[in-house]
Image 1 (spheres, rainbow, N blue to C red):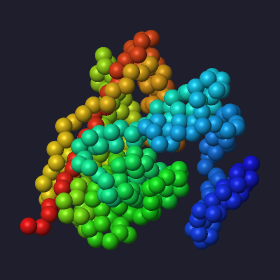
Image 2 (cartoon, rainbow, N blue to C red):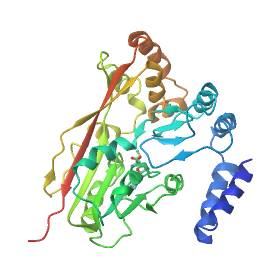
Image 3 (cartoon, protein in one colour):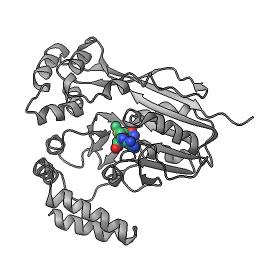
Image 4 (cartoon, rainbow, N blue to C red):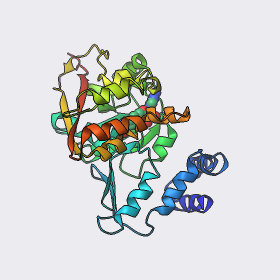
Length: 332
Ligand SMILES: C[S@@+](CC[C@H](N)C(=O)[O-])C[C@H]1O[C@@H](n2cnc3c(N)ncnc32)[C@H](O)[C@@H]1O
C-alpha cells in the first residue's frame, strides 16, 4: 500500500519538481516509510485505514486546517481513527467536523503579531524554523513573498503546497543576499538556534528598518485549578523535557539584541474545554513521547486526578503569548 502511495506521489509531483531534488525526496521517503519504518507506523496505518475514504473539501488557508464538513461522516468513527494518530503536534485541524487540538498552535502566533505590523504590501518576510509552514502560510495574504526556512527537510516536505518558498537550512546560515527581507519571524523555534550566530545572520539579511520578532507561548493554566498543570509539567514530566524547554516557556527573557526593542504587552489565549479535550491536548506533549520511550506513562495518573477535580463542566484554559521584537536601525 505504501509503495503504491509513493508511486502515486512521485507521478503527481513530477511536473512540479526538477528530477534531482524529487528523486532525493522520494528515496528518503521510501527509506523512512518502507525500508526502515518508524516503530509506530503500523498503528498510524491502521488509523488511516479507519478514516473515511473518498473525496472531501479541504480548506488549508484558514486558522484551522479543515478536511470535510460536519455530518458528512460518522463522527464516532472519525474520532476513533484520529485517536490512533495521537500525538498530534502541529495544528489545529478539523476532520469532518471533529476538532483536533494540538501541542503547537501556529495560528495563535500569527494572530498575535499581525495587528502590530504597518502595511505590508510589496514586503518580503522570512519565517525561520518554519517547520511544516503553518505560521508561514498565515503570513502569505499579507506579504508579496514569504520564505520559510527550517533545518529539517522532513518538516519542509510535510508542508502543503502554498505560495511560501521553502529552503532547508540552518537558522544561522541563510542562503540569502544581504538586506533582502523586511521582517523575520521565529515562531516557537528560537530556543533551538545558535543564538549569537543567528542574530548576526538576521542583521545581515534584514533591511535597515526591518523587524526581527521572536514569538512564543508558555505553559497553560486552568481556571479554578490554578497550578495543577505547572505541577505536572515541572514534576512528573520534568525529566522528559529538553533543557531548552524552560527558555521557550518563559518567553525568551534572556534574548538580547543591541537594537531598539519593540514592546508588545503580553496577551492571553483562551479556550473553553472539557476535561477530555484538555487531556487529548496534553497527550500531544513531546515529553510524554520521551517518557513512553522509557516505558513510563505519567499522563494516566494525572488524567485520573484531573477528571476528579475538573468536573463535568467546561473550564477556561489560558496560555500566555509573548513577542520579543527589535527594529534594525536605519543608517543616519
Ligand atoms: C516547535 S517547531 C515550530 C515550527 C513552526 N515555526 C510553527 O510555529 O509551527 C521548531 C522548529 O525549529 C526547527 N529548528 C530547530 N533547530 C533549527 C535550526 N538550528 N535552524 C533552523 N530550524 C531549526 C525544527 O526543525 C522545528 O521545525
